[in-house]
Image (tube, rainbow, N blue to C red; front, side, top):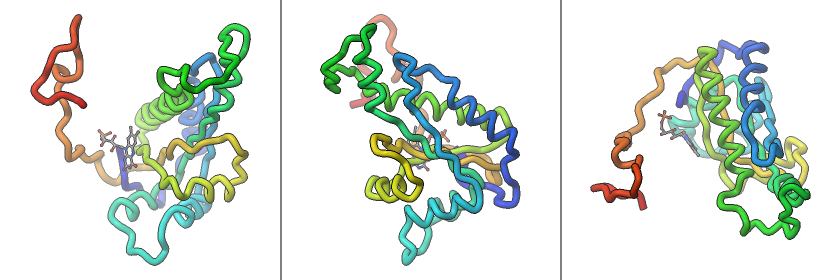
Length: 193
Ligand SMILES: Cc1cc2nc3c(=O)[nH]c(=O)nc-3n(C[C@H](O)[C@H](O)[C@H](O)COP(=O)(O)O)c2cc1C
């Protein structure tokens, strides 16, 4: 994840299109394709930060860095589109009961789109970061950009030319032995709870 960009280098239009295309060419549950992307470029990105930050507070290091991103891709998903798709005859979940879902595929699919864009960005020589949005700002964002009812904001992908190497997470990477269980779930010294 890259959290500081060169603000003087825009993302070329063809590069951006390829990154967005990667986000669309992903698997989706029932091929619902219920994930949509709202693309903000300068000067529109500034409005996003105005909508999500407190103008009276001193910006922290994270915000100072992220505000340099020339492109923000807001990732939206439509749970109703999945409930509709799975109510079709080949799926048959006509009661549209969310309890049927082992995991909400509308969020799973958004994660697929995000990861594809992150990989595509790296392939294009860009830096990128996925980050969450303050929940209490979501309604204001939807209203500001004319997003219709039924769309949920999952998060944002920032894109740009990195000025820092991706920093290592302060947390240690867990070893495969802790996370991969073969044949039988085996107790480890640091169980994930
Ligand atoms: C679901 C999800 C939410 C995340 N939210 C944020 C966020 O709000 N802000 C941020 O700076 N990074 C966010 N990240 C990035 C993680 O902090 C990062 O992937 C992790 O620390 C590992 O670092 P690396 O991806 O650079 O190896 C998020 C990642 C995921 C998958």
